[in-house]
Image 1 (cartoon, rainbow, N blue to C red):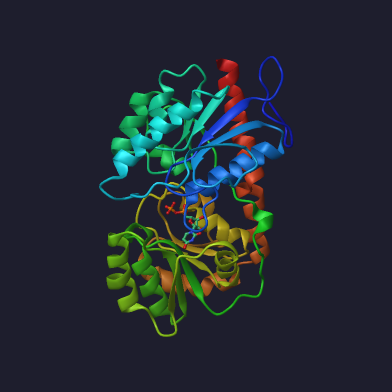
Image 2: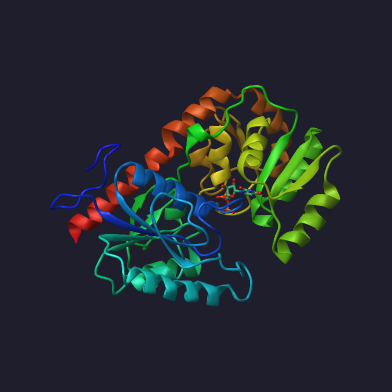
Length: 355
Ligand code: UDP
C-alpha cells in the first residue's frame, strides 16, 4: 500500500493511471454551491500532489492540475428539473467518447449515469455514492454490481446488498479554511434551501433562542425559492438575514465567524460537507441526530446533537462552551483531504491488483 505523499502503485510498478469523472452540473471546482464537484476537485488535486497520473473528466473551464478532458465547455443546466435525466445520459455518452481516447488503470465515477459504462469496461470502475443509496438508487447500484464507496457508515447501513468496498469520508483542505476563536454574534445556516436540510427548524430555533441567524445557500430551483419565501423569509427573527448563495472567502468567513452552524437535518444525510467545513473553521455544529451526524459530530466535544427540534434553541447556548481548537483538530485528523486521498489510493490499488 502507498504511504502518504506517494502515488498509488500498479502491480508491475509505476503510478496507477486514474480517471476521475465528476457530475455535469457545476464546474470543478464550483464557484459556489456544489459539494460533489468540490470533493472531486480536492481529490484530484491531492492525487496529483502525490505524483499520480490523473485525468479529470468534467464540464466547464479547466480548474485543476490534472489532465483535463472536458465533455462540455459549459456545465449542464437542468439539475432537479424534468430534463435532468436526459442531461445525465447525454453527459454519460460524452464521458464514453472522451474516455475512449485515454489510457487508464481505474475509473473513479462520481456521476449518476456514468457508472453504466463501467459494466463492459476493461479497466475497473469504482463509484462513490454521494446521495442516499437506499431505495431505487440502491437497486441501481446492486444491479450494476460495481464496487461502490460510501461516504459514511450511515449511508452504507441503509443499503445492504450494495457492493460496498470501502467507506471514505469526504475531505476538505482544512489548512485553507480560516480559523477563528473569537466568534461574531450570529448563528449560521449554510446549504441548499430544502426542507430536508431543515432550514425552517433553524429559523424556529434561532427565534426561540433569541439569536441572530444568517441564512446562506442555494435557492435556484422553483421549489427551493418557494420554501425560502414561505418557511424561511416569512419567519426570519429580528436582525437576521438571508444573504443568498455564497462562495470563496465570503462563505469561509461566514463559517469562521459563526457561534455555531445549525444542521437540523430532516433526512438521512449521507455526509454533509458543511459540517466538516464548520469544524475546520473552529465552529461547532448544532445538529439533529440523523444520517451521518453522529459520525461527524461528537456531542459535547465538537457540537451538540439533539434528538428533537425543540432542543435546538438550548443547544445553541451550550455550543458556546465548545473549544474551537478541538473542532479544528478533529477536522484535520478525520476530514482532511489527505485522509481522503489515503482512503481512495488504497481502493484504487486493491482494484488494480485484483484486475
Ligand atoms: N455551499 C456553498 N455556498 C452556498 C451553499 C452551499 O459554497 O451558498 C457549499 C457548501 O459549503 C458545501 C456544499 O456547497 O461545500 C454543499 O454540500 P453538502 O454536502 O453540505 O450538502 P448537499 O450536497 O446535500 O447539498
